[in-house]
Image (cartoon, rainbow over all chains, first blue to last red; front, side, top):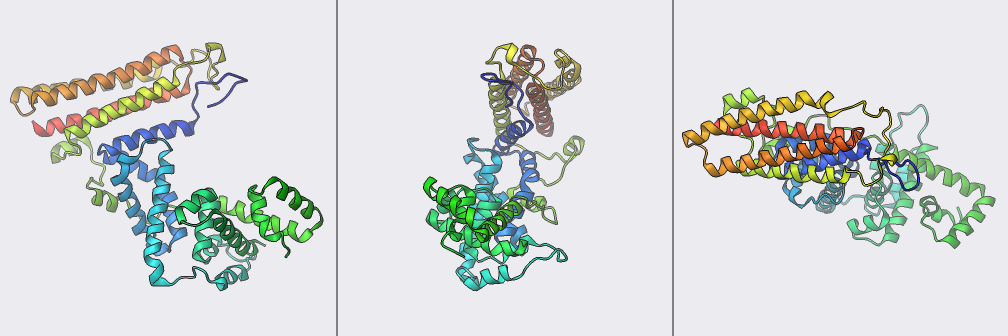
Length: 190
Length: 224
């Protein structure tokens, strides 16, 4: 809402607020079984959700898990109360689905969950102007813990307390992982 | 690398305690290496925030639609009639109608003036330059026609016994409630004709009313 001076406010909602109202309406309609309303929500958010999955997991899993997330969202729409924006609600749901998926595959893969060499691998490949800059690829090479925290904090905008809650770690651990991730990535941008 | 290096991310995020921040400020003033590292970390954060989201290479909607049991296709009303395809049940339609009104009613109440008229501003429009009639008239007429079409279908269904009286009653009630939402939005616009939000809200309410009417008519036609 715009302000015109102390104590006054216009009645003109900004486009983002209007879009949020329309999304809340679509979410309500979708919760009552309206597939088209849900498709509109899908179209509006699929790029963000797919990118989140691609960054936090491997690209070859992104399509399947994105589908899983939207199917889960459809099933859970009745729990959307409109207290937050629909996009926020969906993103949080997506993070939970992704983290659950990561837990399932972590044991199988034995990935670089706490492998210090992985950080060296990321930071050791310096980026030059001649190279195609692939920052996302560098993020993908981070150890799991640092990668999760970096994406959630610096890309998605979560706070350390929220990340700690999502990952089941202390906020201090989240801060430490974030610093390790940034330090590893900074040399790519030198 | 010194004892402060590991605190640079917290400094950047402004999560250090006041005294620590002041101490690090003092350190940065005399440490070129830490200043350089801080600049690099700042670039990493900026780069992360600037990452663009990309949609999947293939449209995932058909697969999702199949899994949740809705049609992935955009089907015209006439095609729906031919196919006798029913997208929503009557209770779902009623729920959707009521939900529309609840959302719409709340939005209008939120937008109604709570400040003196003199305090209301509307960028880019002259007072009285936009009226409900000037743009919404055709949409309202179209929705009135759609209401007539639905009522005709309801009358046929009721007389033939294929639609029970209770269903007719709840659909009529839903229509009345939706009309009330439209009226509410129009009244709000009479009070504040320059509100862009109210104009958008009325347009959206009319669009959703039209959508509801189309679905209700399709459903009723499929039963008769």
